[in-house]
Length: 304
Image (cartoon, rainbow, N blue to C red; front, top):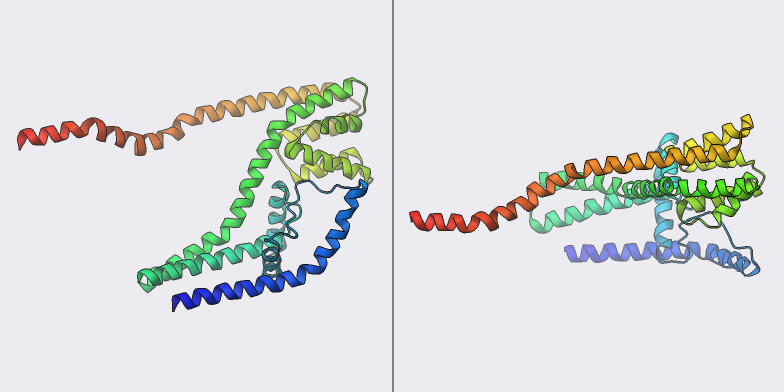
């Protein structure tokens, strides 16, 4: 009976995937036509967009978006803004909050069904089955957002680490006689990673008509870190007060390096405390078995 149920679920999932694929075919053709623009030298777009069009995950994304649209109406506007903020921090510009909500629902239902199947196979009590299913459903609901926030945190840490190098390149360009935008364009050509991608997006926004300060504020909206906030505030004040940007950038770079050194010292001081738990619960028991084991056996043999 359980095997028939699993086969039915697999067939239903395959049918849903084929339907989503058939709905997506016109969009794939349009994207293929637009992709030919890159042959004429006009390639480009938002940085780090998770475009999965034409891949095996595309039908699953469409199905998750459909579920998210249906259930997303029950969420308030503040929750959607929080999800969108986490997606921007993670660099997932091509992902809508409704898709994440759809994946949350799918993961919750799937985890709950897996627990029900496992409890039925193990002949567990009904109360334990219900409690475990609820717990697994909540765990599946939080799992997609946990992955997004983990990626966002790692990306923000990379931005914090790369920002002093970008400021050094800006100082060299500004002192060489370049303007701020020109120095930023020259520095971004030598930058990789999330910070370089964000700054390239900032330069694209300037070409669309935004001022450098407005583009910097948009960068701060997408990736809000302490060092970047200090950098944007210093540039804004320097432009408004007419202060030399080179001196401002040099002071900001020095402050960021001091902050990064303090953060490294803080992590170094936390390391012994973090090592204490695996040392007590994993290393010490094995050492006691190896060292005291022969003595215990010899003692029992002596008194035996």
